[in-house]
Image (cartoon, rainbow, N blue to C red; front, side, top):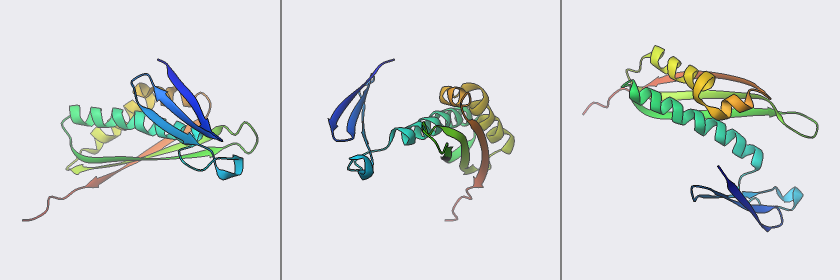
Length: 143
């Protein structure tokens, strides 16, 4: 896999993926940026959450759960000193659906966190990763 990062101006860059997609990254005004894009450390959390979300959705779909939404909120704590690496990261899964089986949701989240998510496997070597989940039962609307 290969990506390309090109400097645009000041603290702004465009990252291009091998699959042909682009992301704008920019720094805060304090370092000369114009806040035109996400920060690299934000993208790390986005990568973790989206990698895990893909796993969880796929597992729940394969187990024929009637899932209507999946949101993962990722919160990271960084070290006080440079390099300000993540020391703790917490993922909170909110899975919505109709009559979801808790055992299936737990299994999907556990499998992603402990087996399938490549980003999680890498980050847990450097930071404490924790996770929890909640299930929101979507009651069908009466007509």
